Structure formats: C-alpha cells, structure tokens
Image: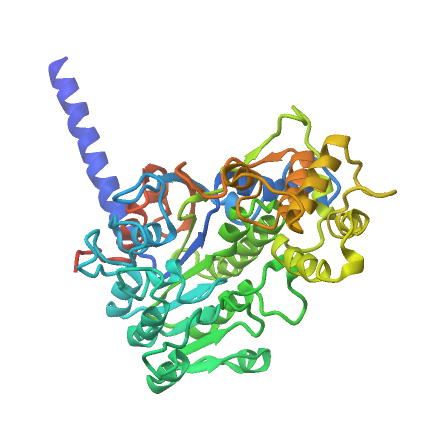
Length: 479
C-alpha cells in the first residue's frame, strides 16, 4: 500500500511539473496593453450606468457594458501612505509605479524626495511605444503620474514641461490646465513643439494624423477653461470623443514590438463630487465605448493583448437605493436631465442676473426644462420637494442664509438650486450619495487577455501595475 501511495504521489508531481512547464512554454506575453482608469468609478457607478442603459431600451434590469463582461474580476484597496481615503495623485502614483505615496504627490516617494519609475516610463525603455490619454487636462493628477515627477499635483506648469521630456509617442484628450507661468515666458505648448511634438487642436488636424506620425499631442478641439473635454452629456457632434482618441492611439502606436496605452476617464470623478448621477453615467458609458475600441483590437490579437479596467478610488459614496423609494427604483426618470449640473449652473447664474428672471416661477420653469421636475407634464413634486427648491432658490440669489455646516451638508459648495434639483431627481430614481468627496471603499478591477488571470482576487492598488509589468515581461523597480 505504501508503495502504491508513493507511486501515485510521484505521478502527481510529474503531472504538475509537466503542466507547469507546458503553461510557461505556451503562456503569451502581453505585447499590447490597454490600462483604463475610471477616476472615481466605484461598483455602484457601474451598476447605475448599466441600469440607465437598460431603461434606454425600455426594459428593467441592467444592460452590461463592455468591461463588465470581462472574464476576470478582482477588487483593489486604495489607501494612500498617509491617509485612508486617498486622492487622485496618491492613487495615480500607486497605479502607475506600484508604490504608495502621500496625498497630492505625483510619482515621488512619500517624503516627496525621490522620483518613482512609472510603468509607462519602464515600457518605453523596454522598447514599447507609449500613449497617455485623458478626458481631463493632460497635466492633471492621474495622467501626470505616468510621465511626471513633482511634489505637488497643483504644479501644473512644471508637470506640463515634463510631458515632452518623457519622449512618449502619443498624448491625447485634454489640453494643458496651465500652459503659462508668470516667471517663465515659455508656453508649455511651444516647449513641446521645440521638443519635436506635433500638436493638433482641430478635428481636421486630428483626422489627418496617420500611421508613421511620431511624437503626437492631440488635444480636444473643444475644451473647457480647465483644459478638460466637455462632459459627454454636453458634447455635440463637433466634439472629439474619448473613444476617438483611443482609436487614434491604436492607429499610430501599432508596431511589431508592441505598445502601452493608459486612458483615463477623469470626469466620472468630477460629476460624482457634485453628486450629478446622470452626468456621471454618461461619462462611464463613454469609458465603456473607449474600452470597446481596445476590444476590437484584442479580437485581432487575442493572445498578445491585455486590457485592464479599474478606478483610482470611489467618489461620492454612491449607492443604489433611497429611503423614500424603499425597494422601488425609477431609473427611467433620469433621462429627463438634459445637461450637466455644471452647465446648468452657468446658465442659471447668468439668467438670474436679469431682473425679470428673479422669481420662483422662472426658477421652476428651469427645473422643468432641464431636469423634467414639476410642471404640467413633468415629474410630480411633493410639497417637501417644492420647499427644498424654494429654499435653494432663495439661497442661490442671496435672499436666505444658512450656517456654513448646514449649507455644506446640503449643497457641498455647489450652486444650491442645481444641487437640490439633481438631489431630488437622483432620490426619486432611487439613487443616494453619502459624500461630496472620495471614499475609502475598494474598487473593482476587470481584465481580459494575456496575463489577465493574475487580476483575480483581492489585492492592493500597488499590485496592479506590477501585475501588468509581469505580463509585459519586466519588473517595476524603485528608481
């Protein structure tokens, strides 16, 4: 009996060794890598977006987005080195370098003294082409962490000057937040041109980019003062979309050695700070469409392509459910919102400057026109909700005061009438928020392709770039 047991053990060991050898000999290295980051995107953001998509088709339940159908799903923790609830700079550094750092630090150690090598920089030294894309300004925290090293995230000009020094092959999406500096007469755009970058600012210039063009910085043809692309809900047929930048990056970067592309949908976070669910949803859907571009490429190179989708943190403490709706949901009413809260605020603020518009009747007409609230054919409002809007209107025009704590709890520093309108619409739909800030809950990770099996499980955000590097055939090291 002992001899039989020993023989079986030997056979099992041989089978294990042979299978391990077979796997290592046949496992494909990730030659083409797409790393998508939905800034502020938690699991509830995805669920809300899928419920919204389902109601667009007139049916209950959810309509899966591109990345939520990936075969591999994991979760990552997001804390910074010096705070449990992280910020985009610290989280971006973790996702780009594989190391924790302190709040507001861009790809440097926690003491803000030593630079940390990003996976994008390492990929470039390994011979891969590199592309960095974002829907917010390209010198914003998350994209900056992949090519810059600065002690403070608000050093936009210094970060912008590091962009061309990286030598990366493609930058796309948002413009510079601060291309000028009072003490330095050199524009960040001019400096990039001096370093050999071709900068496009129109759709025509963008569409004329072709395979073989090197060192490209393609900015959005329509951008906000911040340098960001407009919210998707506010975009028109004229706007260059995030998915178009991903498609162009693939066109320009495709080569025999391979490439690494990081694409951030940064305005999911911005909308979530303002608890603007509908605007957030449109930008999550935009991220999904951008991932679809990568999936199309993956389908042509399934054994050599890795796609990873995650978030740097959750924003807003979003949940699906509200006290007044109980077990019911009414996601279909979210389609009544026509523009982002940001754009509505700009519009309302300017309209209330006109004397004849300074009355509650006009304010309620705006509620019906842009949020579908009230009126003859709009979403019915309770007396409580009407009072909420009336108070918000009076505070908005300076005819009513609240103490600072109560005002912040209600409106979070946003235009009171706007904040109240979206709160009522969200709550009636069955959506709630707990914070005007980031939260510390873990975020989902989705993966498909070469090396994707490593992304199963529950791990720290610093593990994500290390896993990507391993799939690409190299390691991330402290610089």
